[in-house]
Length: 117
Image (cartoon, rainbow, N blue to C red; front, side, top):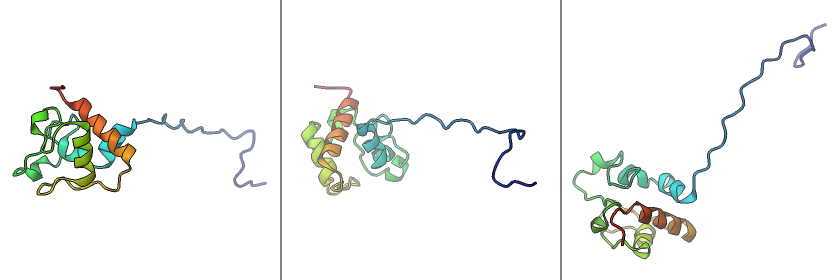
């Protein structure tokens, strides 16, 4: 008798390996990656992302150095730049983001600053 879709007790069962464990990325880092910040500002926020070579004629802020911020380096200034963009630069407005996402991203950028207050 031929059976389809069922294993008999005598058939060897090949087990697949278990799926990898899920990785949880904290919200601030997820916002930085998902919204493309990393492509211009780089993984460390030093202004050396994968798209930097396309923006040679543009000054990309180095989040590690507060003196390179165009609109100020406070959390409020950073959040404002994220929400509204910076006219005359490649920094577009991220008005689609929720306030808690913008605040989380601003906090993440603050933590990148080397010369903190």
